[in-house]
Image 1 (cartoon, one colour):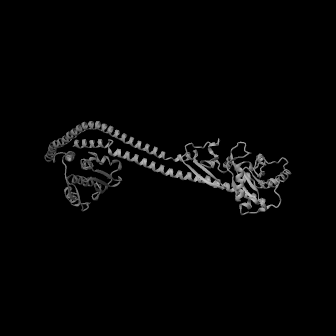
Image 2 (cartoon, rainbow, N blue to C red):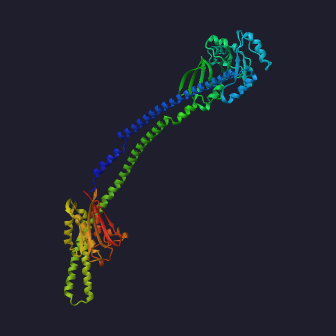
Image 3 (cartoon, rainbow, N blue to C red):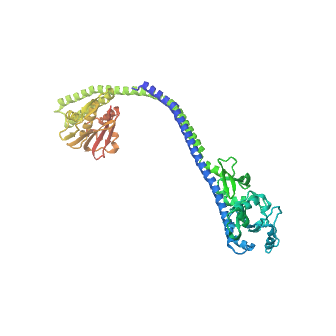
Length: 583
């Protein structure tokens, strides 16, 4: 009988389990905490990587500028070496030939030219002008100034873009003049402070780079000697914008820079009209000061938009968004499952109510059917016994006077009465199966088989083999099952002798009992039919029995939560497997 109290308790448990409880909320909260932790950690790691990358970019920018300035210094030094090495006077054609051999537009990108500035004393001015006007009649020194010496640009190559600088006197302007004197006094290459080149039509910041050379290629040790022996400087003019474009092309860097010299701007990416990569709110900034040939250049470096875009390609916010999305999906799943559970329980309640009504009707019908089977079979036995008795009387009274055919009819009537009696007995046994519950006890399989051998009066030609093993099982129903299996194997055997083997295997949850014979097999298509009531695979006149053996076996085993299987190829031999649920 159904235990409705247990069902109600189970339903209440399922209802509570399907609701959003503390465990569900803890899972969601824990998932959010994990998401935030992962986001914070990844953000910290990403920031560290980005900062390290920015530092590398910044250092690379400064290193490239320093390397390029060193390259220009070497170019000027090679010019000095050239002047010191020639024994004749340097003329404009000779300087042009030397400068062209340098291929400065390819070898020194960013440089505006390379030239010579001589130091002219007042008493040397006229001879200097006469000498220069031999090749350039219009050559003159400009502009006028009040200094006591002259530092005019004598030669500059290429001439065309630097034409306005030819003859320009460095002494006219403080930055130019102070740096050229510093180069003279130190004997080292020097930079000027920020200036505007006369040849730069756009008037953008620039500077000059000087390297001194002395008379007869000498290397004076003291300032006085240098001032006395100075002959001039090899110089190069630079427009800072052109220098930076040649040194640090925008497409090759992810930082924007601003360079100042004593507060004066030399270069600023933000002033570059063509620059579209400038970031007004940079992720990182850095200040670097470097000493370059007598000047201190201050680099203000900041990340630009390309740096930001590349860094945000793997931004930790994606982790946060993705994690929160998963968290929301998890919460939604819990809510959905909770609602689905309630709907399922509501539906189950409706189905259960319907099933309860049907179950009550079915239980009543089964009870009525079992009662009917019991009463019908029991009540039919009395008239059947009377029929058998009458047949016996008729045989005794008329055995000598009735023809042979009538005797056969009486034999057939007796045979059919016996079969009917067996059918009624089996039907009574079948109806009693569910009426009584038997407790499991320990039985010996071999001993039970011996008892059944005697009970069934098994023909001497049959050999039954069973293992000597104890199993715990309900004795009476198991005895009925084993008795019917042995009886079937003998009744349906096609020979007068045979072997029946009973084997046992202990499963995790089931007793597995196998009864195997060497009689005719059961075709596979009849395996299911053989376990139905009143079914025989031979004509009823050729085999004894009611056809209820396997159906009774199946009902008993199923009642004890087991199952029955038939293994046979339909030719020879049949194996019946009984899976009996352990208690």
